[in-house]
Image (cartoon, rainbow, N blue to C red; front, side, top):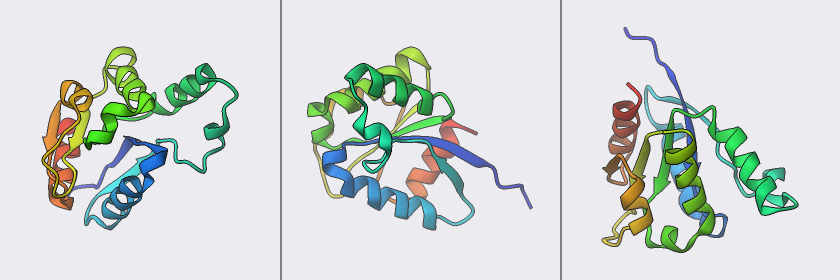
Length: 138
């Protein structure tokens, strides 16, 4: 039996559309034979109240440095979120982290920002998402 390895993830998401983040966390937590640590910045994190945009950016960088894969829901709203764009820039530019994009459930529209940053696209299902994370971080 293989030893289960914990994956360190940064889940890029919009605080305004936190329901997708919540559903993704539930899905990952319930995934069989999959262990992960979430290094993202949820809405209730004190970093959310950073005094300046630069302070928030630095706080995000401090979290992202530990992750092995950046995960993002590729919904159209990501195009209009400055912070999701910033997180993807950090992932690719500062850290050269692989980006896993999840196609929103039952949606055909995908963010152009996410499309250009993604290393791999997967469907909204437990096996696809976990398989994608494992593919980007074997």
